[in-house]
Amino acid sequence: MNPAFDLAAVGALVVVTAVLGFSGVRSSRTRSDFFVASRSVGSVWNASAISGEYLSAGTFLGLAGLVLLSGAEGFWFPVGYAAGYLLVLLFVAAPLRRSGAYTIPDFTEARLESRAVRRVTSVVVLVIGWLYIVPQLHGAALALGVVAPGPPWAGGVIVAVLVAGIVAAGGMRAITAVQAFQYWLKLTALLVPAVFLVVALSGGGIDVDPSRVFPAASGPGAIDAYGTASLMLALLLGTIGLPHVLVRFYTSPNGASARRTTVVVIVLIGVFYAVSSTMALLARVIAPDLASPGVADTVVLALPSRMFPGIFGEVLTALLVAGAFAAFLATSSGIVVSLAGVVSQDVLGGGVRAFRIAAVLCTAVPLAVALLTEPAGLVSSVGVVFVFAASTLSPVLLLGVWWRRLTARGAVVGMVVGAVSCGGALVIGGAVGGAGGWAVVLAQPAAWTIPLTTAVIVVVSLLDRRGAPVRVERYLARLHIPDA
Image 1 (cartoon, rainbow, N blue to C red):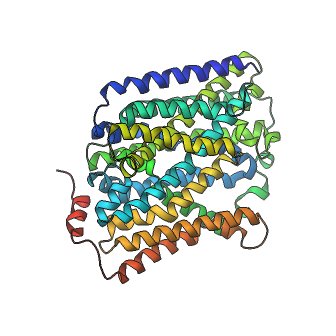
Image 2: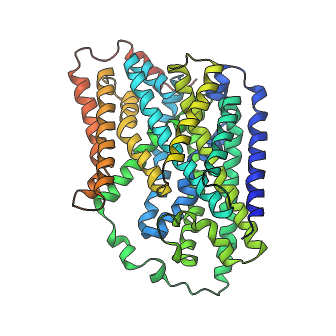
Image 3: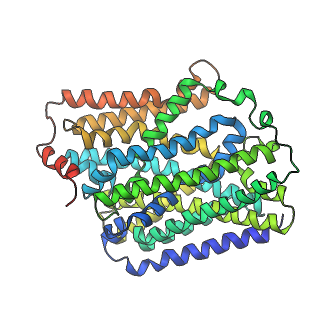
């Protein structure tokens, strides 16, 4: 394999990303520009940007690796990822935009009139964001290490430096164009090789045995009912609790635009998951020998060279490498913007200068963690984030939008209980491994941590003598009255 094409593709992506990002710096002047792009992003453009940041390393590389390792069970992830936006559309997109907030802590503080709620929400947002960034940096290091010689940390450092620079320079306005461009690049980077691979397979030369691609042991009869149901619950509700996704709805001009944006997002990510799933199926046909932990996540990059030895396969591989780095950059930049908004307001006093410092800090912390830890499976790592978000932030947001009796004390206690129960289950489950009948309950805790968090919030709120905020009716009316 000639690394020159791959390095050239990464270099070209870095240059285009830098040009698009820094071209938006000139129009980024105010706090509103940096936090929410002055609430002026149109539906299609915003949907492209949301899709660009949502489709992470776990989708671009990790889905094929997961399907290669676990068979048909791996396809529950794209189903859950895409369907989660239906809940966003139905329950939170327009109300959050009408709230007028800049960040999720802004919303919870305004809704519950409590600084304590804001502080706890900020901590939860930081944990979710950093848990999400680390797999992106691991994926960048993994992808660059496969296609080119160099130190194992190089890919993660390249992504972190570029993301911190663009976000600090121009904030939300600067990265919107970057993320929208990177969605279409990622789709093209998967679609073009997939088309050529399917055509090559249909032309003969490889005997495709369905029983070998998906053995009976990996079929629907082998699916664990509890584990699958718990996973789907985490993916569906976890999307509602992802700060970097929700903050983009604040960039829409109004609530109606936010709803239109969500509809377009469902279409865009649905198309992408169809292409990504096709690559996962092709991986089981072309490269079943790569089905081992630590290697499976790179299978997408290996497919073109196996089917097309020579320069054509190398060009397709370079396109895939560029798409993979676009995934790392788009997702990381979206998360850093959402975290920088929180840190700059809650720790550094607010303002543009504080936002820029916060952007660098919010990139440096996960980079340090990524350099000190070994990568796990990309999809499973991202899945942990969805479980944690669904167990902590999602119930508070849903009840905050739709239940008038929610109190600050209920929200605080609920988020703490959700974080402790979910985090404890995942840590204990990781230590226990696959031994014992409780292993799946600990490895997939969403089925009991989400109801537990919700029940705690409701019970504590009902028992709270201080009751709901005085101005709750006025605030809820603002969230739910349609735009003029």
